[in-house]
Every structure is written in C-alpha cells, then in structure tokens.
Length: 76
Image 1 (tube, rainbow, N blue to C red):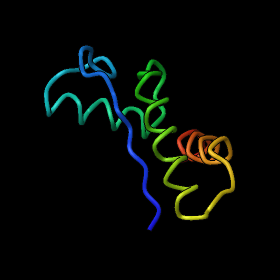
Image 2: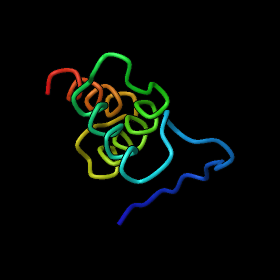
Image 3: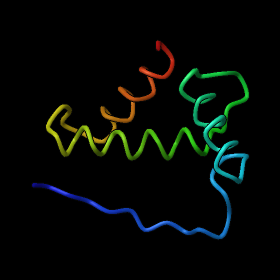
C-alpha cells in the first residue's frame, strides 16, 4: 500500500471559518462551487484529492489529479 503524509502548519485557519458547524457549511460551499468559496480550502482539497488519485493509480500525475478534482467541483 502506497501512502503519503502532509505536514502542515496549524497557526492559521484554512478557509474562512473556525468551528465545527460553520466549517461544514464552508465545505459544502466548496462542494457546490459557490461564488466566494475559500480558495485556500480548494487548493488543499485538490492537492490531497489529487494525491489520492495518484496513489490509487487513477491518474499518472498529481497535476492530472488536481485538475480532475477541480473539474468535479466545477461540474458537480
């Protein structure tokens, strides 16, 4: 099983919200690709989702994976 890890800095929030309920709302806004959604949250999700697609051999490169995730957001 191939794995990877991300070491992230937790000094600043990712996205606009802090707190469980409103973080869920923010995640749903991203999934619906609403105007004004958090771009840094989008980047994190595309990076991690793209990496998962590489690790599961769905795509060859992280760039392909990121784009597949981003297009899924845009197209539903």
